[in-house]
Structure formats: structure tokens, C-alpha cells
Length: 256
Ligand code: IPE
Ligand code: IPE
Ligand code: MG
Image (tube, rainbow, N blue to C red; front, side, top):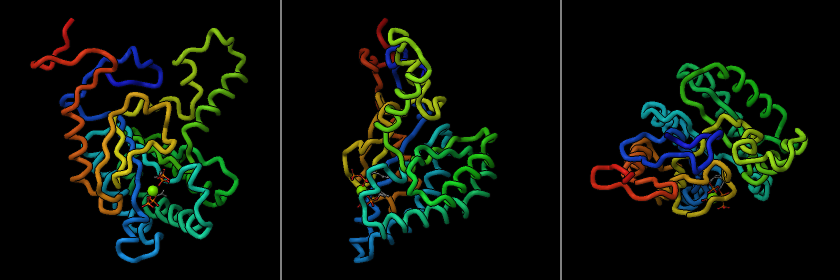
């Protein structure tokens, strides 16, 4: 049984062997280095990332992944030069508008996680809302794009919402807390893939990655393709997820 937002870590059964992860989350890292290696401006790396995004969405969908989350812009990324930030805002708008019909045709439900900062251009925020509305009834894979996202900020938002609800402190448990997170129906992440070899969490979906498996392929995001993604799924299927329990035996069974 995969972890879900309404389920505590202790309630989850272990195991990954042979299973497609239900929720895969990608930290799309390495665009700047991809460009630098070609003596190109960093923005070229971001532009080249579009092909990977579409490839990975399609690979995940056809592999049977139910939830795919992509980290596109962090609350910390506002620290970048304004020229790069402006470029990213324009690029994301273009990508969203261009691929909206395809995403909808594929039955993908799209969501944008974060998007709270007033510096986000209103036209981009509107495009996000339009795509969420267009695809809201779709029952295929759910694609969550984390944009202006911070894991800590989500946890603080949940704490505020919980306090406002007037729930007594003793009545708060993991399940009721998680119900106040943004998009509380999102199941816990099973597998995080961070490209470019960096081995950091960078404030990504902190609550939901509590018991995720991690992979750090060295390939830079603009070079990452469906076969790399499928290799990660394959590696995941070899892992024995224990959730604090004991290892499986040679038959893949857990001792009673
Ligand atoms: C990830 O690539 C894209 C965003 C954070 C928007 P980077 O831009 O972080 O690329 P590197 O890490 O500098 O190579
Ligand atoms: C994390 O990558 C954010 C995204 C991929 C959107 P960064 O490149 O911004 O993270 P750090 O600075 O290496 O931690
Ligand atoms: Mg980076």
C-alpha cells in the first residue's frame, strides 16, 4: 500500500519490488551547467529543458505513474538575477500555453503548487488557473508543477490553516495536519529523481518526501530523456522499502 496524505508513515506497508511508483517527483536540475558546457547563456539551458519536460511527462504517463510532480521554480529561486527570473516567467508561460491542448488530450490533470508571490506576472498566474480549470476533471495522471514552491512555506501554511480552524492542540495528529497542506489529496512521494548529480532536497515537498526513495542521476536535466526515467523506475523496483520494518526474505516476503 503506498503512503497517502491521509496515512501516517507507520500505517504504510513496505515494499517496492516490481511496482511502478505511484508518485514520482523530479527536481529538474542542471540547466545552467548544460548551457555553460556549451558556452551558452544559462537561459539556453532553461529553453532546452522544455523537450525533457514533455518527454518525462509522456514516459511517466505511459509507464502508469499516477502522480508526477515537477519542481520548476523554488521560493529561493527569486534570488537569481532578475533577467533570468524574467526569462523563466516568460518561458513557463509559453510552455504552458503551447502544451495545454496536448496535456488535456492525454487526460492529464494539471496543478500548480505554490504560486503565491506577488512578483509572479498576473498573466502567468491566469494561465495556470486556466490550465487547472481546463484539465480539472481529467482522470489520467495528475501533473503537479511546483512553481514558486517551498516545502517549509507549505508546512507553515498548513499550521496557519489548522490554527484558524480552531482545532484543539491535542486533536492534531499527522493525518489532520496533512489535511491542511495545499492539495491534501496528493499522496506521499514514492520516488524523487534529482538530475545533475546534486544531492540536496532544496526545500522540495518536505512533508510528502518523508519516506521517498531517492535517485541522483548525473545527467543534466536538458539531456534527461524517457530511457533515463524508465531506468530510475527500474532501479526503484529493485529497492526494498521497509518503512522502519524488517527486510524482505529471498521470496520477497516479510517475516510475520
Ligand atoms: C534548474 O536548473 C532550473 C531551475 C532551478 C529553474 P539550474 O538553473 O538550477 O541549473 P544549474 O544547477 O545552475 O546547472
Ligand atoms: C532546485 O534547484 C529548484 C528547482 C529545480 C526548481 P536549485 O538549483 O535552485 O537548487 P540549489 O540552489 O542547488 O539548492
Ligand atoms: Mg541548480
